[in-house]
Length: 308
Image 1 (cartoon, rainbow, N blue to C red):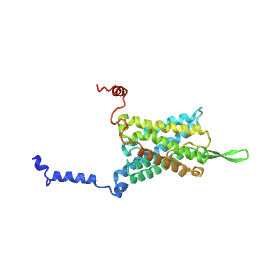
Image 2: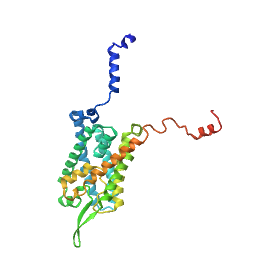
Image 3: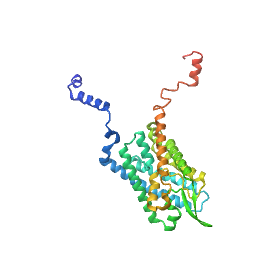
């Protein structure tokens, strides 16, 4: 019976051959770009999670920015960073089962370059994230007073602000070049120090989902604290590291939020490509995949010619 089932003319044998040929056949351009994702109901359903998740993220984060700066505390940047880390961790855990928990064009772009998701899915996600960010900014505008909205720029990403001076209005903030490099460095560190743990199935499995997402939130919180503290410039809101969040506030609030807005897109894009190059350079297997052959006792044994 076993011999009959494995005969070249048997359906089981032919099915196995077809599967092997399918694996060997090169992917078409349509498959590599993931064009079928544009008509996949599951992908669009997942994008709803990205949309709503980003809307809540923008509403919460911008609320945190305004609340901590408005409150009378000695280190509002530290409080803001801690609350941001907690909020991001919770939202990532909430959206991860639905769409993978991106909530950020940086993650979607990076995941596309690495090959985790298709370019088509990334486009759908990024559009959903931008729409969600705009909805979150609209929700925030609806609940804050006009004076708070104007004073804190709706919690958006700013390089400069206009303040009253002795001889008229003056512009204060950070220079474009400094903000640009900060955006690149902070986004790269974000990808390097935390997101790679989620990409690497070995680390993700050993650490666990909650731990990985907590580390992502913690690293983002630290980078927010560093970028806002080290510069010490009033008017600079810190590294955005999330173009959608910056876009949502700029679209709703407008005005000076569009000044240098390109930095919050180009900087992260460069960081994504730099991180992709890093992933192509590092070895695909763990450097201890072949065991610990340089173990000290083993070196001593080899030195004295002992195999025991």
